[in-house]
Image 1 (tube, rainbow, N blue to C red):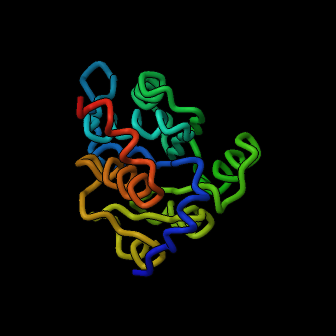
Image 2: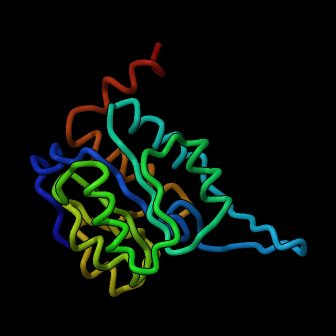
Amino acid sequence: MTQINKTDLKLIKLLAMDVDGVLTDGKITICSDGTEMKTFNLLDGHGIKMWKRAGLKTAMISGRESAVTKQRAKEMEIDFVYQPCQKKLDGFEKLLADSKLEPKNIAYIGDDVLDIPLVKRAGFGIAVANAVDELKSTALYITSRNGGDGAVREVVEYILKNTGQWSALMERYLV
């Protein structure tokens, strides 16, 4: 695994994420009434809030259409949400146009083969610890935590700490 130059991390302005397998553990519960349930990790949620407090943007790119994903995106005030994206690279290209950013300004976190083109195209491509091997082999960074178990928070901390933004964000908690 090659790690990105820490100077290049300062170019990251937007954190884009897959949902199932990254923000969740990849399990989906279908209830008898047809509704869907997913579990999101609060560490990831607070990490996203800290990311946004640093003045940075967020996006979700999911292969599946899900009301639960839409609800979580609304709660987290995610800036850009693209679902369903059968060809996730199309969603990524739309994100570039909508955000008016370049690939070098985007970090992307994925877990499966559908994420390979995005991990390759993003300035900082990331695989969660329990991602498939094919994705891990293309990532610049592999988290130590699994998807749905704080991997997003780990990435947020890694980028913010290595760009000198973490200490200022921590001040509110240390009073």
